[in-house]
Image (tube, rainbow, N blue to C red; front, side, top):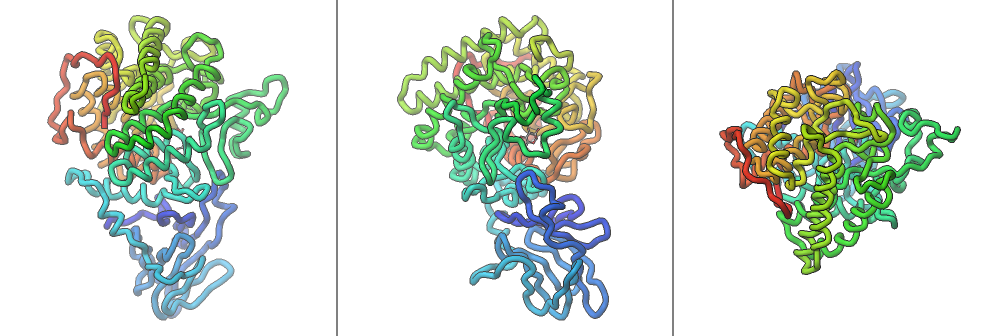
Length: 537
Ligand code: GLC
């Protein structure tokens, strides 16, 4: 089993809110993970060290099952609330306290009958999907990440993006998590979708976040810590305080896409029947409530809804229409039609709507060279890979699809580590700042998915291989990577759920693409599909 770097990320356990971290001075501190609460407010212990006979016992190594000190002392979880120090003839000391360690010393919580010190990580690792030899170590780390990121939220098991900063279920993160879980625990994958849909608003909107105390539906629900950014995003129109201006907050419409991905691996018609009306309502919400100019093309009304909240697109206005949104909606119509077909219902309206929306996007947003991104009605002069996302529809005419693939393979977006979230040759490109240049695995995954659906299997596989290599060589499971160095970027968190999930799913390969890394780029893609939605992963 691999070792953990406690300076990079905390030691924690599946379903536990306790985080054990190493301070600059080498001592340990322990805090609880709570929704949008700084760890300084939830700290339980600081300055924890272990001694024997007046000498400090240094930490020898940390592994998923526990932190080992010299002299046979170990700090491990017995259950999610209980951290135990086990050893003989030693003493634990922390700021304001201390205790002898002779046998088991319970630092937090209660030992129950049957608790096993160090948990049963072996069992979890036994479920790790098989992967290529060179990816195995990183895959184990990713798999462990998906294990420790599980928490009980509103009495249900949810995977959180990171216990270090994102302690709740985030909307689109959950879709990406489900994509990996479907291979091993489809029930848990479906549960991620259900938790979100159980908090769906009567008007169909799926909230941005489901947390311990409720859900985040509108800007008025945002935590205090977001208020400064909120003022930037929604302004102080009519003198109202930004936290009093109710703008809906959601995430990109990829719910049906994820549902269908689960279904292709673990078919379950009952689940489809259960979620279908909710997915239809969610889809209609975008056109009824998120298309302020009524032109039939939906817009994001808040940066958070786009999922790319710090993208320079948002430097141009509080609402925007990058080309990804309507592309996802086209595909969601197609998947709704597929689900209807699977349930023996009539899905032709969804199919026709997909066709119409594609035609509208091309008529209104394709300028002959590219799909434009609008903010407040004007074109935004920043190049982001969202302009490639119409490939996600799998419905583009061959010449347009080819032009987008050429754009992807140009120096703007291609390199050893594609795809930067702002083009390499754009003035706004910054390799370190969130959504302003770094590589995010979900964008790569969505593009890979779209390339496959559009008939560009070799290009999809090349992007897949480069993405896997970047994560393999980059040192950890980060939130985002610097595309120039391949290392963790700026303030990216580590142990990030969707990076773990999508890496694992990509590492499994794809029946169309093989796993060998031998695919070559072709000059001509196959003809794109004109209808329907193939599974791509
Ligand atoms: C950040 C990302 C957003 C994501 C959230 C939780 O806000 O920009 O896309 O959903 O973190 O991971």
